[in-house]
Length: 487
Ligand code: SF4
Image (cartoon, rainbow, N blue to C red; front, side, top):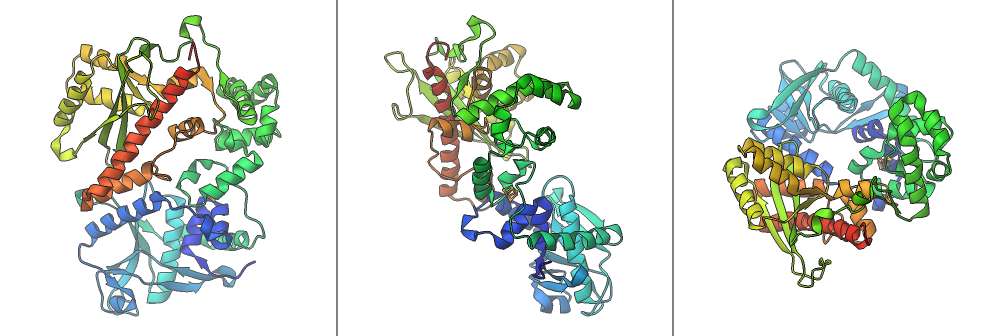
């Protein structure tokens, strides 16, 4: 067993993914990618802490000795089971009643929670902080405080650190040490959805592609992968070679939906293995065209919404107007000046004003279909119209204009991509975002920073990202048009 130091960060990584902790310790740091999620989590935590303790906190041991209400920067160390050396750096300590080496007061650790619920990761990391803090202050730490939100929306939750939680920690730490001592990294995590939040995703994506990991097949999550592994299918190539009927029968024990999905999974694996797209058979000849609404349209409006999901705030509705060219054809990227119109929706301006502005844009292009990628935009727009009292006729008209390019693509084509998200599909076609490496989380971070500190450049980056998403949507629509009669 490795006797190196175990930190709270390693424990947290390990609880998310064993491979991640191993890479944190042994991986090539230059392979790490910056991730906006961590920056978002830290800025949320800071907002919660500032609401909890508005005064500037003290720093380190002198602040503890002086009895500061809040303390940051105290590094803790101690020993764990089997002689393991432990270190931790809680982001905030809050003064509580008690007697400690620092006098007539003691401290408890505080954590800013991400997400709606406390997870095992939160609990065990808090248990580690509590254990080391108790050693340092010479007084027990029976509970921790967990906060989320900010301002009047601050939520507080107390977590007992004694009993079962310490037993779980005792059991987890030696296993963490053993995993860190392995000569090779542990395998990729079973459910790779969580990889989008991880700084090692670039390295692991390449590894998944190299080994033909089953998670590379679009439509296979952690649960389906387990089922396929049980059947002896361990890679994309093996799935591509499987007999769909036999697989359907074998998966039927897990439920009808898995039986029904077998043929599509094998077909998807085959398309990915071959690297060639496949046109799906239309149900009727009349249904062969994926975008019939464009046949007579004078132009299309592209729409992409940026949201802050925690605040339930659709803060930006970005439009691009794409008129049909004089010769009746549709433009390609680079053919035409693209008129981008961002509508920024500040919550304090109210929804009624947003709806009036949106209605004006929609009315300026009355017969133009409204293209978007995924169902988010249509759901958000129709709900907004309903809340604003649009009548049944208006709603029906709005619905008839909305055209989900993602849904049309899925109905008509199977592509050699590991995801049908806009980034993967448009990139496969050849579209390049003008700000490389930017994703929705980074855009959200810019938005929150802009709201706090302003800055024209930040807003411009958000607009550029949003405009690019619209152009990527057009790239996919254009690709469908380019596939000849029947799209
Ligand atoms: S990218 Fe995924 S598999 Fe790789 S270390 Fe991170 S969470 Fe684990």
